[in-house]
Amino acid sequence: MILFRNLTKTYRLQGTVKRVVNDVTLLLPSKTSIALLGRNGAGKSTLLRMIAGTTHPTKGEILSDGTISFPVGYAGSFHPDMSGAQNTRFVARIYGVDTESLMEYVRDFAELGSHFYLPIRSYSSGMRSRLSFGISMGLKFDTYLLDEITAVGDAAFKRKSEAVFQNRLKDCGAIYVTHSLGSVREMCTAGMVLEKGQLTYYDDVDEAIERHAWNSRH
Image 1 (cartoon, helix red, strand yellow):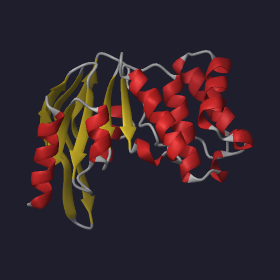
Image 2 (tube, one colour; image 1 turned 180 degrees about the vertical axis):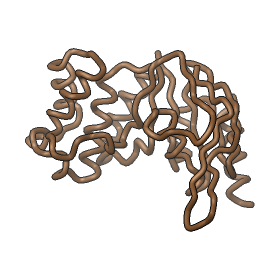
Image 3 (cartoon, one colour; image 1 turned 90 degrees about the horizontal axis):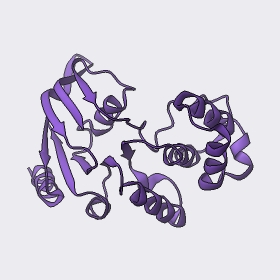
Image 4 (tube, one colour; image 1 turned 135 degrees about the vertical axis):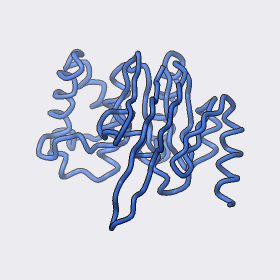
């Protein structure tokens, strides 16, 4: 499970206060694939980074009784002067997994060829996303965080990524941010809608989609 307790996140931009979440208390169930929906700029990616622990709340806390991935597709934690291979080795040591096994998995899965051994700073955004996705899928988490899985490569790579991820969902949960409602219906059973600092959970993903669509029209 993941628990938001009195969670608040605010930013001050040019004298204006923006509230991403405002005093939210919410319990998310384990082993559930949850779509995170909201308008552009609502703060979905910020919330995802708070769940991952890479961004801190202004107030409140996020608690979990399981392991949570870094946002899949987000490569901001990688060292730009290290190669994809070196970053993979570093992540393996952090999570205490077999280095060579993870290296082999990521090298084959990410399809980066010789770029796997070149510095991250030479990668395109798509290549960084593929490396991030490969590392995440090579590690075992109780909950995966995904931000636009559809951005990780060409059509064939997207199909492969979605197939691997759906296989992971047999045993794990996920929080999934995407603008593709078709993907939401395929990959999620529940949903939550972020609107003006309020976060509402729905057991039925179709109800979440309907609420998101209503918010978008008003």
